[in-house]
Amino acid sequence: MCKLAAEFPSRVVPALGLHPWYLQNCSKDWRKNLQELLEQNPKALIGECGLDRLKDVPPNLQKEIFAEHIYLAKEYKRPMLVHAVKAQNWLEGFWTSLKEVRFVLHSFSGSVELLERALSFGAYISFCPQTRARKNFKELAQAVPLQKLLLESDGPYQGNPADISALAKDVAECKNMELKELAAEVYKNSREFIDVR
Image 1 (cartoon, rainbow, N blue to C red):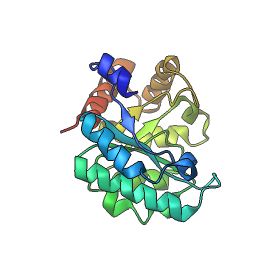
Image 2 (image 1 turned 45 degrees about the vertical axis):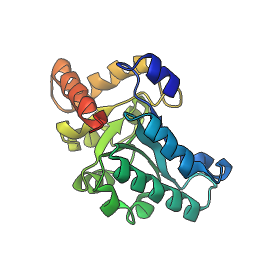
Image 3 (image 1 turned 90 degrees about the horizontal axis):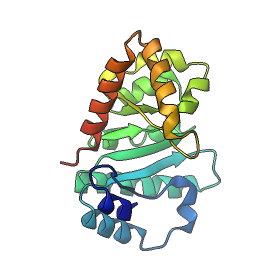
Image 4 (image 1 turned 60 degrees about the vertical axis):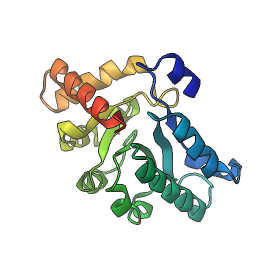
Protein backbone atom coordinates (compact mmCIF):
# COMPACT_ATOMS: atom_id res chain seq x y z
CA MET A 1 0.00 0.00 0.00
CA CYS A 2 2.87 2.40 0.74
CA LYS A 3 4.21 1.84 -2.79
CA LEU A 4 0.79 2.67 -4.26
CA ALA A 5 0.59 5.79 -2.09
CA ALA A 6 4.00 6.90 -3.33
CA GLU A 7 2.96 6.28 -6.92
CA PHE A 8 -0.48 7.92 -6.59
CA PRO A 9 -0.14 10.41 -3.70
CA SER A 10 -3.32 12.32 -4.57
CA ARG A 11 -5.44 9.15 -4.68
CA VAL A 12 -4.06 6.64 -2.16
CA VAL A 13 -3.69 7.21 1.57
CA PRO A 14 -2.11 4.23 3.33
CA ALA A 15 -3.32 2.86 6.65
CA LEU A 16 -0.78 0.93 8.72
CA GLY A 17 -1.42 -1.33 11.67
CA LEU A 18 -2.16 -4.80 12.98
CA HIS A 19 -5.61 -6.25 12.37
CA PRO A 20 -6.91 -8.17 15.42
CA TRP A 21 -7.38 -11.35 13.40
CA TYR A 22 -3.64 -11.73 12.83
CA LEU A 23 -2.06 -10.71 16.13
CA GLN A 24 -0.71 -14.15 16.97
CA ASN A 25 1.44 -14.08 13.83
CA CYS A 26 3.04 -10.68 14.39
CA SER A 27 6.73 -10.29 15.06
CA LYS A 28 8.12 -9.16 18.40
CA ASP A 29 9.37 -6.02 16.66
CA TRP A 30 5.95 -5.05 15.30
CA ARG A 31 5.78 -1.76 17.23
CA LYS A 32 9.23 -0.63 16.13
CA ASN A 33 8.44 -1.64 12.54
CA LEU A 34 5.14 0.24 12.62
CA GLN A 35 6.83 3.35 14.01
CA GLU A 36 9.40 3.25 11.22
CA LEU A 37 6.65 2.93 8.61
CA LEU A 38 4.72 5.84 10.15
CA GLU A 39 7.84 8.00 10.07
CA GLN A 40 8.50 7.06 6.43
CA ASN A 41 4.84 7.73 5.51
CA PRO A 42 3.80 11.00 7.17
CA LYS A 43 0.30 10.90 5.68
CA ALA A 44 -0.48 7.32 6.73
CA LEU A 45 -3.40 6.57 9.00
CA ILE A 46 -3.25 3.96 11.76
CA GLY A 47 -5.23 0.77 11.38
CA GLU A 48 -7.17 -1.20 10.79
CA CYS A 49 -6.76 -2.18 14.41
CA GLY A 50 -9.06 -3.03 17.26
CA LEU A 51 -10.99 -5.78 19.00
CA ASP A 52 -12.88 -8.84 17.78
CA ARG A 53 -14.70 -11.25 20.10
CA LEU A 54 -15.60 -13.66 17.30
CA LYS A 55 -12.00 -14.63 16.57
CA ASP A 56 -9.92 -17.03 18.65
CA VAL A 57 -7.29 -14.46 19.59
CA PRO A 58 -6.56 -13.99 23.32
CA PRO A 59 -8.48 -10.96 24.64
CA ASN A 60 -5.52 -9.66 26.63
CA LEU A 61 -3.31 -9.70 23.53
CA GLN A 62 -5.97 -7.83 21.54
CA LYS A 63 -6.38 -5.19 24.25
CA GLU A 64 -2.64 -4.73 24.72
CA ILE A 65 -1.95 -4.24 21.01
CA PHE A 66 -5.00 -2.00 20.53
CA ALA A 67 -3.79 0.21 23.41
CA GLU A 68 -0.39 0.49 21.68
CA HIS A 69 -2.08 1.59 18.44
CA ILE A 70 -4.00 4.30 20.31
CA TYR A 71 -0.76 5.47 21.91
CA LEU A 72 0.91 5.69 18.49
CA ALA A 73 -2.08 7.57 17.06
CA LYS A 74 -1.64 10.16 19.80
CA GLU A 75 2.14 10.30 19.45
CA TYR A 76 2.08 10.69 15.66
CA LYS A 77 -1.21 12.64 15.54
CA ARG A 78 -2.75 10.19 13.07
CA PRO A 79 -6.38 9.20 12.55
CA MET A 80 -7.34 5.61 13.43
CA LEU A 81 -9.44 3.00 11.64
CA VAL A 82 -11.02 0.94 14.42
CA HIS A 83 -12.30 -2.61 13.97
CA ALA A 84 -14.81 -3.57 16.68
CA VAL A 85 -16.84 -6.77 16.35
CA LYS A 86 -19.07 -7.88 19.23
CA ALA A 87 -16.66 -5.94 21.45
CA GLN A 88 -18.91 -3.36 23.10
CA ASN A 89 -17.89 -4.36 26.64
CA TRP A 90 -14.18 -4.44 25.75
CA LEU A 91 -14.41 -0.95 24.26
CA GLU A 92 -15.47 0.47 27.62
CA GLY A 93 -11.84 0.40 28.74
CA PHE A 94 -10.75 2.47 25.72
CA TRP A 95 -13.26 5.28 25.16
CA THR A 96 -11.35 7.87 27.20
CA SER A 97 -8.12 7.19 25.28
CA LEU A 98 -9.93 7.13 21.94
CA LYS A 99 -11.43 10.53 22.67
CA GLU A 100 -7.90 11.96 22.40
CA VAL A 101 -7.52 10.86 18.75
CA ARG A 102 -9.55 11.12 15.56
CA PHE A 103 -11.09 7.69 14.97
CA VAL A 104 -13.74 5.90 12.96
CA LEU A 105 -15.63 2.76 13.84
CA HIS A 106 -15.37 1.24 10.42
CA SER A 107 -17.96 -1.02 8.81
CA PHE A 108 -20.31 -0.25 11.69
CA SER A 109 -23.01 -2.84 12.33
CA GLY A 110 -23.68 -2.52 16.05
CA SER A 111 -26.61 -1.26 18.06
CA VAL A 112 -27.91 2.29 18.19
CA GLU A 113 -26.79 2.37 21.81
CA LEU A 114 -23.20 1.56 20.82
CA LEU A 115 -23.37 4.12 18.03
CA GLU A 116 -24.50 6.83 20.46
CA ARG A 117 -21.80 5.82 22.98
CA ALA A 118 -19.12 6.04 20.27
CA LEU A 119 -20.41 9.41 19.05
CA SER A 120 -20.24 10.79 22.59
CA PHE A 121 -16.48 10.17 22.46
CA GLY A 122 -16.05 11.84 19.07
CA ALA A 123 -16.21 8.83 16.74
CA TYR A 124 -16.88 8.97 13.06
CA ILE A 125 -19.19 6.16 11.93
CA SER A 126 -18.64 4.37 8.63
CA PHE A 127 -21.14 2.12 6.90
CA CYS A 128 -20.32 -0.47 4.26
CA PRO A 129 -22.72 -2.07 1.73
CA GLN A 130 -23.39 -5.02 4.04
CA THR A 131 -24.77 -2.64 6.69
CA ARG A 132 -27.89 -2.24 4.55
CA ALA A 133 -28.87 -5.85 5.34
CA ARG A 134 -29.17 -5.14 9.07
CA LYS A 135 -32.65 -4.85 10.55
CA ASN A 136 -31.72 -1.59 12.26
CA PHE A 137 -30.09 0.00 9.20
CA LYS A 138 -32.63 2.80 8.86
CA GLU A 139 -32.40 3.61 12.56
CA LEU A 140 -28.59 3.65 12.41
CA ALA A 141 -28.54 5.84 9.31
CA GLN A 142 -30.90 8.32 10.93
CA ALA A 143 -28.94 8.35 14.21
CA VAL A 144 -25.55 9.29 12.74
CA PRO A 145 -25.07 13.06 12.55
CA LEU A 146 -24.28 14.02 8.97
CA GLN A 147 -20.90 15.53 9.93
CA LYS A 148 -19.78 12.19 11.44
CA LEU A 149 -20.88 9.91 8.58
CA LEU A 150 -18.49 8.04 6.29
CA LEU A 151 -19.11 5.34 3.65
CA GLU A 152 -16.75 2.56 2.59
CA SER A 153 -16.65 -0.61 0.55
CA ASP A 154 -14.61 -2.67 3.05
CA GLY A 155 -13.70 -4.58 -0.07
CA PRO A 156 -13.15 -7.28 -0.90
CA TYR A 157 -14.71 -8.63 2.32
CA GLN A 158 -18.07 -6.85 2.37
CA GLY A 159 -18.40 -5.21 -1.00
CA ASN A 160 -16.54 -3.28 -3.64
CA PRO A 161 -16.29 0.41 -4.58
CA ALA A 162 -19.11 0.06 -7.10
CA ASP A 163 -21.50 -0.79 -4.22
CA ILE A 164 -20.98 2.57 -2.49
CA SER A 165 -23.35 4.39 -4.88
CA ALA A 166 -26.27 2.16 -3.86
CA LEU A 167 -25.31 2.49 -0.19
CA ALA A 168 -25.22 6.30 -0.47
CA LYS A 169 -28.63 6.28 -2.16
CA ASP A 170 -30.14 4.21 0.65
CA VAL A 171 -28.58 6.37 3.38
CA ALA A 172 -29.84 9.53 1.65
CA GLU A 173 -33.36 8.06 1.58
CA CYS A 174 -33.15 7.21 5.29
CA LYS A 175 -32.07 10.76 6.04
CA ASN A 176 -34.64 12.27 3.65
CA MET A 177 -31.86 14.04 1.72
CA GLU A 178 -30.88 14.53 -1.88
CA LEU A 179 -28.20 12.05 -2.92
CA LYS A 180 -25.91 14.83 -4.19
CA GLU A 181 -26.12 16.64 -0.86
CA LEU A 182 -25.30 13.48 1.10
CA ALA A 183 -22.43 12.59 -1.24
CA ALA A 184 -20.94 16.08 -0.88
CA GLU A 185 -21.10 15.88 2.92
CA VAL A 186 -19.57 12.40 3.07
CA TYR A 187 -16.76 13.49 0.74
CA LYS A 188 -16.10 16.53 2.96
CA ASN A 189 -16.07 14.30 6.06
CA SER A 190 -13.62 11.89 4.46
CA ARG A 191 -11.24 14.74 3.58
CA GLU A 192 -11.46 16.09 7.12
CA PHE A 193 -10.94 12.64 8.65
CA ILE A 194 -7.85 11.67 6.67
CA ASP A 195 -6.22 15.09 6.99
CA VAL A 196 -2.98 14.36 8.83
CA ARG A 197 -2.10 17.53 10.68
